[in-house]
Each structure stands twice: as structure tokens, then as C-alpha cells.
Image 1 (cartoon, rainbow, N blue to C red):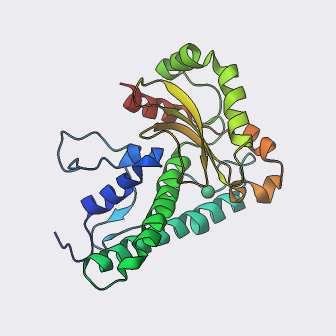
Image 2 (image 1 turned 90 degrees about the horizontal axis):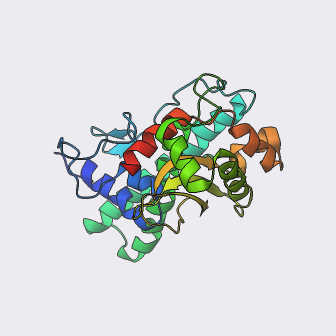
Amino acid sequence: MGESTFGRREAMAALGALGAGTLAGAAFAQPGVDRTSKAGPAPALPSGLGWDESKGEFTLPPLPYNPAALEPHIDAQTMTIHHGKHHAGYVAGLNKALAELAKVREGAGDAALVKHWSREVSFHGSGHVNHTLFWHMLAPAGKGGGGRPAGTLAAAIDREMGGFDKFTTHFKAAANQVEGGGWAWLAVEPQGRRLVVIQQEKQQDLMLTGARPVLGIDVWEHAYYLKYQNRRADYVNAWFEVANWGKAQDLYTQAAT
Ligand code: MN
């Protein structure tokens, strides 16, 4: 299958190996699971992570809506730069790191730099996975975005978080209190399959191994600074107007059942 550099399974396994840190890795990459088998769990997103078999590298998946579609809550310029520059940069960084590690295996690279490139895979791979999820976790207000969860996710929030209002109090505080750049996530922890709210510093560090994402907010400044400047709390409030609870329900169903 043209394994001159690395194959899809290897690349996906590399992302999965972020595992200790990356909740989103659990959504996409199941190390050891053959994606061609019907027995494996379905990917979280039909478009996946943009793996291009012919190029042997990841490509930037398109936004699932127009960059202006989330206005006025998230502005078009922010979306264009966030997707076209920042997310694209993570894809390029991931491809670079995976290629450098492949060179090391082939005896052509500097084995002393494996720690460096491994960290690059973790950072850029997590950035790619997180952002691929993030775009789908948003939708235009009133057209899939905003409102409240329904179904089993709403029931789980009532049961395990004390209700939607208490959840949002917790989630907004978690998002607002991420130090520097990072993320806040509603996720399913894998042991008891209960909902948790967690912070992720930068984008690769996460305490809860194997947590499965349900809904997440990017609170790096590049996600809001053009419109909201230092007012992160205003961005977090506005973000709820475009939060895609239908997608969250899909991810919750996959993670909790
Ligand atoms: Mn971002």
C-alpha cells in the first residue's frame, strides 16, 4: 500500500498515541483497529481527518459552512484566519513531524530529535484533531446552533451535572479560567461513562486519559481576539449561541453507549 513514508494506519496510530493527552484522539484514532473492517467503531466525522492516501499526508478538511455563517457571534475574519492559517498550520506541522519520524526509522534522520518530533506530533496532531471536531461542534444560530441539548444528552446533563444551568456555570468557568491558550470540553470519561467538564492547556495536555469529546470550546486568543479582544467571557457567552447540540448528542451517543 505504498508505505514509502507512512501509511494511514500508522498515521492514525500516531495520533492515537497522543492518547494520554488527547481526548479527541479517542474520537478518531483507535490504534490497532482496522478502519477497513466493519467491526471497528465508526469515525466521529464522516470526513475524518483529511487523510490523503495518494499524498501520504493529512490535508485541511473544509469548513462545514461559510466563514460568515456564525456571525455575529463569531466573525468571518476570525473564522477565515483560524481555519485557513491556524488549523492549516497544525496540519502542516503534523505532516512535517510524521515525515521526520519516518526519516529516523529509515536511518536518514537524526534519532536524537525523536523527542522533539514526538512533541510536535502531539501538539500539531492534537491541534488538527481538536479543530476538525471544533468546526462541527458549531452551527449557525437557529440553524443547528444555540438552544439547549435534547434527548439522552440532556437527560445525562440533568442527572450527572444537576441540570443545564449548573452545567453552563461550570463549563463557562472552566473555559474562562484556562490559563493562556487552551480548551474546555464537555466529555465522557471512559470508566464510568459519566459526563465531565475538563480543561486542556494549550491543546495537547489533558489529565483524563481516553476521555471522549462531546462539545468543546477553543479559548486560544486566535479564536476570539479580533472581535472580543481581551473579553474572553463575552466570547464564551456568544459561543453558546452557535454551539451545535445535535452534534454533541451524536458524540455523546457514540461515547456513552
Ligand atoms: Mn484554535
